[in-house]
Image (cartoon, rainbow, N blue to C red; front, side, top):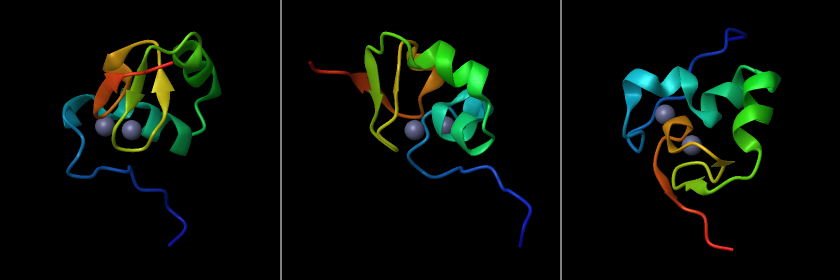
Length: 66
Ligand SMILES: [Zn+2]
Ligand SMILES: [Zn+2]
């Protein structure tokens, strides 16, 4: 049970791009991409609560309220 499986759940609105989503980037520890998307976040993922500056990097993006 040591192999990491992609986190895909029903709340992902764009499963084809899930490899690019913060949930999956965090699981895969893709730090460079995470840092890129986490800078000046404007969107929050309704699925996992991660924030990003590109809604294409989130499963269920919504506006990040200050
Ligand atoms: Zn998410
Ligand atoms: Zn996703």
